[in-house]
Image (cartoon, rainbow, N blue to C red; front, side):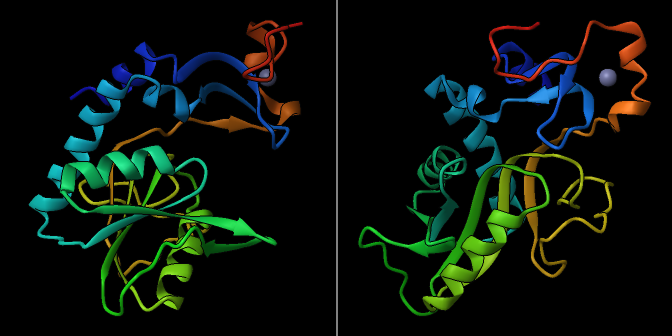
Length: 203
Ligand code: ZN
């Protein structure tokens, strides 16, 4: 499965000259939610991710996603694995299980995101699960931004990755692309001014 092609087709992987929220520039931008806009694509990607998890022998009782970004990916992954799906959300800044979601002691949980950058929200969701008595057995995401090491890829985790090294991380693809400080961006010389993705006015 050509994951990058699927992202491009869905306008989830944009190419151009972008101003990131960090202030850095990049030639690529991921709009992760766009790839899940078509439920058929979402189901296809989740089935592939579930197959990787099952092939590795990881068994779970449920999937938990950090809201908001991870919910659709986690729900589809749970469907593909035949387990239930819950989500954690911020309440007063702390990732919490609400809405009557419960985890029984010892239940095995996969934490699922749409994309893992450094894994910060995923780790907070994992902490909420463990505080409730659950056992986090793996992390999963449709895409890996390239800062964390995943099963089946040679990418090594860099210092910004927050995922624990002793739990497997499954993802369908690595989206590694360079980012540049605004004053040292080679694209500035060859492209129109960097735009904020999602902005309709490109001026
Ligand atoms: Zn630039």
